[in-house]
Amino acid sequence: MANARLQIRSPIPGRLYALVLNRGTFSRIIGAMNADAGQPRPTLSADDYRNAIGRFLTGVTVVTTQHAGQLQGITASAVASVSLQPPTLLICLNRQSSTCRTLTTSGAFCVNVLADAQQALGLRFASKTDDKFAGIEFLPGANGAPRIAGALAQLECTVTSMHEAATHNVFFGTVTQVHVADGQPLAYFRGSFTRLEA
Image 1: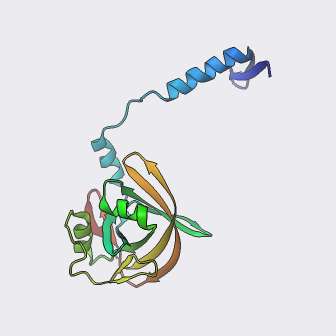
Image 2: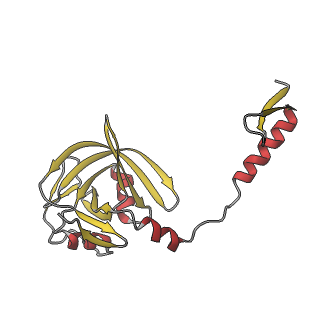
Image 3: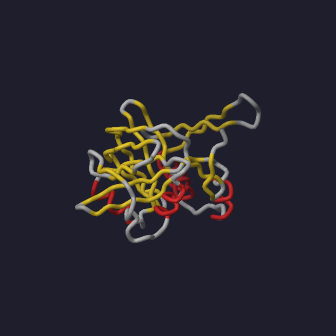
């Protein structure tokens, strides 16, 4: 194709202008646009972003996994349902965490949705304690990932894909088994654990 045709919107409502460019000129314009898109943009400070996103009330989970007998778990609120058919969810983990590194190898995990009485567990798995499972009651799931006793829900998952996003890895998992219990959830709001009022 020798020429390319662009439509440019006029300041006059409802009017468009047509611009015909030869292929070389068109390529230079697109190249300049792509180069500009790659330039760093002014960004929010981490504190401003944290202050805003902290106002989004979330549940609290402990994501667990295991590989070669090594148990790993981490407190996570970046968990979301993706689809019902097939049942799929996603989790976001900092790639520097040992849980993320182990999950990359194991390919299986369990999302344990904490009850409101499990705040201590949420704090424990958010810490850098060496053996987070010491004294914790749990059962191995069918996929090998620990199912923490007392959780409101336990969703066993198989990783279907993983994507890098800034400092985190985003894991998509197909949910293979679920276990549920009655109770009230633990919540997280503005940097602190909280309970939902009845």
